[in-house]
Structures are given as structure tokens and as C-alpha cells.
Amino acid sequence: MTIMGLDFSQVNLDEIVTATIDTLKMLGFSALFTFIIGLPIGIILYLSAKSSSWLVKAFYRIISIVVNILRSVPFVILLVAIIPFTRLIVGTSLGVLGTIPPLVISAAPFFARLVETTLREVDRGVIEAAQAMGASLPQIISKVLLREAFPGLLASMTMTAVALVSYTAMSGMVGGGGLGSLAINYGYYRYESEVMILAVIIMVILVQLLQMAGDKLVLHFTRK
Amino acid sequence: MIQLKQLTKSYGKGRKVTTALSDLNLSIQKGEIFGVIGHSGAGKSTLIRCINLLERPTSGEVWVNGVELTGLSKKQLQEQRRKIGMIFQHFNLLSSATVYDNVAFPLRLTKTSKEQIDRKVNELLSLVGLEEHKDKYPAQLSGGQKQRVGIARALASDPDVLLCDEATSALDPQTTNSILKLLLDINKKFNITIVLITHEMHVIQSICDRVAVIHEGGIVEQGPVTEVFLKPQHYVTREFILRDEANNEALQIAIEAPHLDSSRAAKITFVGEMTYESILSQTSKDTGVNFAILQGTISTIKDVPYGQLIVRFEGDKKAIDQTIKVLTGQGLDVEVIE
Image (cartoon, rainbow over all chains, first blue to last red; front, side, top):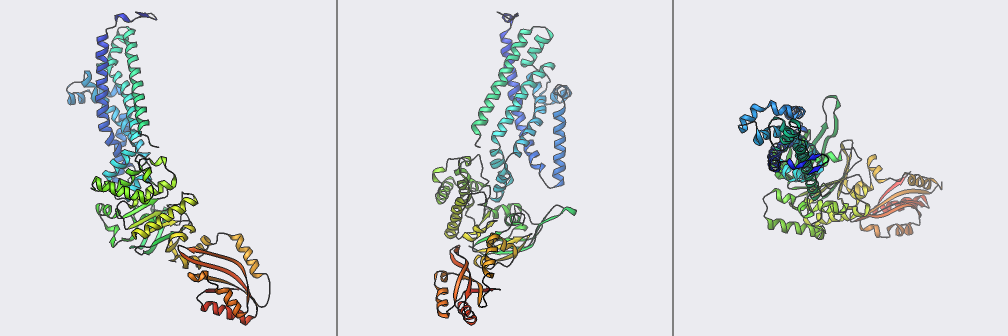
């Protein structure tokens, strides 16, 4: 099978399937932990930003700076820099398991910022109405903020997941496994473009599917 | 029912302090509809938001139903707020929740059983006439319908007080009237105290029992609506009532016109049932004084009929004095215009 001078008959399909599954695993777990960690940080950022107490404001500044630093460090560098930390948490810095901590550490601050921005879009008046009805802070967060911002949060999750797909590919550089590793090992080191092209095509499809599913969900839950 | 004592609210600090309310005192009785009228920036919005502490006053006391709110803990305040309903100019409904869920919202904040919630919400939706719309989302409703949802939601926790923050300002005149009528019905049915703020005299005139005029952070005039409306003392109050400046000029010309020795212009005010009686023509027949009506209004304030006429009496000087005396004796308010 030859297309445009490329011979796809030599491609090992098993390898591609394994790599795809690895990528999905990395994506799934890192997205899950990113959302679990990023959501509360986003909520804290939102709540502390408009506080009148200087203590809370200082706290906001500190978190905000940490979030900004983590966001500005290039992923590849972060990946290498935190290898000792990664080993400490998951016991290895290689393979699917070894990529999850750096992925989460780099995506969670990004997601937290998106959450903060999304929550800011919630109408102040609605929050005020809930306050006037005697709602407590936890009730306002769960029954007003998260509920009203839900479509926006879904959109933020989609954006984060899409960003994670390209991050998982980068982790291939340092032995992370998955489609990214496959593309680099074959395409970059061995000049076998066929595998690289297939790996890229699969990732493009993956991103398209994620975006489509995300958009559908956002539309489904939007009431405005 | 509600007492505000020496309420002061200022924003900012240092040199940039702006004072929204200064040393304001107000007392509102149980079961009445109390209106606060003022221009934008007069402090009326701050005033109503101080009653449930959405804005915390800089100093002063807020008493609602015998409880001083500013001294309460967070938890106690939340408890008290459940007894104070509030509706807003922009309705402030949850856009992600159906009409039903919006009305159920305050009930779900406390441990209320499903059956109880269902019963209460359906009862309220039929009260405000929205039973068929209960599965719709706010975006599918008109402004008037949204405010009805707001009212139902505010009533869900059986409050003693309903605060209306410019509740009709975003609505067209017809819808405004239907919402006002609903508020009046609710006031009569549940004997709930209603405090409303507005910049429209029409709103005050339609449903309020008493009114306070707020200007530059203080109350400049207050009393029963009939009194404040018919005999405004402060110039701000007059501004709200006499919108038609051109008309007043025309009136001035009419009053001054004839230059007869024996004519006299007067403003006559009737309040109550006497509005519809023939007191004026009866008296003029008896004293032999003729009169011309220069300007006049016959209308109602809430459900009290009133009339205010500016007339010019013509005839014998003594007879005119006699006429005025008789009219005053009948309980009319006669103010001679010099």
C-alpha cells in the first residue's frame, strides 16, 4: 500500500493501537486529576479576588503568582524539572504513569484560571438574590455559582482536554509513551514518516472528537 | 416592624469618602406598604439593601421584627434573611433553573420535604398565575412573567417583609400596573409588610400607604401618601409631583388674568368620599359667588379618592370670604393663592 510515496504496509498496527490506548489513558487520568485539583483552586481564586480583607487579598496574590509561574514554564522543561517529584508520587518518571503528575501540574493552573474567568461571568445579581434568601457560602457555590456557570465550565474542560492532548505528545520526548513517543521515535529518530503521520492523524481526530463532544454538551446545557 | 436608627453608610476611605446615607431614621409599621422615592443617586437603593444587610451600614442599627440585624452572627443573619423576601429590578433569577426550580430555591436551602416543596411551589405559581410555565426557563419568559417568578420565589419562605428594589422600573407601564396590583393583593392576603423604592410617583400613588422622600442620603419628607402627595413641603417632593412645568406657567397666567377687584384664586383639596359630592357648587349657590375652574384633578391615591382644583372665585369680596369659610367648615382644604 503506497500513498504519495509513503508505504503504509510496513506499519505495525499493534504498536499504534497500544500507543493510542496509552494516550487515552494519559489523557483520561490527567484530565480527571486536573479537574479535581483545578476546580477548587479556581473557586478559591474567584472568591478571594473580590474580598475586602487584606489577608484574603494577599492570599489571592500568592496563589495567583504560583498559578502564573506554573503556566509560564514551558511544559517540556517542567516535565524534566519535576522528575524527582514525579518519582516520589508515582514511583517512576517513565511511561504512562510517569507523565500524569507533570501533565496535571501544568494543566491544573491553566484550568483553574479558566474556572475563575467562567465564574466571574455569573450574574452578580443572582448571587445577591441567593444571599438575600439566606443562602450560606457553600450553598451559593454549589447551587448558584457552579450551576449557573456549568456550560462555561464544560467549555473550559474541553479546552483543557484539548491542550492536554498536545502535552501528552510532548511527553513522548522524555519517554512518556503513547502516540507522541511513537511519532518521535519513528518519525524523528528513524525517519519513518508513515508512523509519524498516522500518529498525528489519530491525534487530530482525537482533538476534533473532544471539541465536538464538548461543544455539544455546552449547547445542551445552555439556557440563555 | 422595621426600624432604621441613625443609619450611615459611606464608601471608600480617607479623602475619597462618599456618603450614601447619613444619620437616617425610618420606622415602618407592620402590614403597610411603605414607599421610598428619590432620584437616582439619592441613596434609596443603599437604603433598601441595608434592611437585609446586603449592604452593611457604616454605623447605625437595623431592626426587623424586633431583631437587631447588624449584631448577628453570619448564621443568625442567614436565618433572619429567610424572613425577608426581596425582588429586584433585573429579577435576578437563576438562568439555569426552570420556573419551578427558581421558586423552590429558597425552600431547598433549608431541610424541606419534597412534598412540602411541591405543594408550596404549586400554590405560589397559581398565586402569580404561572402554573403553565413552570417547566420553562427564565429566558423564555417576558419581563412581567420574570418578575412574577421573582415574587413567587420571594414569598416561598413565608417572609414577614417583602423588599422591592425598583421592581417595576424595567417593565412597561401596563406590566408595571399588573405587578403593582399583584403586590397589593399579596399585601392584603398575607398582611405582609412591603417596602418599595422607586423613582416613579405613579408607583407610590398606586399602592403605598406611606411614603418617604429621600434626597442626598437623608429623608426630607414623609407621611401618609395623601398628605405628602397633596401638600408637598420639600422642593424635591414637588418636583416628583409637578412634572409639567409648561402647564404651571399657563396656570399662572390664568390666575393673574382678569385683574378684577373682587376675584380670588384658591387651591381646593378634597380627600375621601367628599370628592364625589357637590360641595363646591352647593356652596357657591348659597353664597352667590361664581367660580371658574382653572385646573383640576380627580383621581385616587391607592383606594382613597381625592380631588385638587384650582378655581377663581368671582363676586362680592365678603361673599368670597364667606364661601371659603363654608368650604373649610365642610372639611375641605382651601389655600388662597395670592
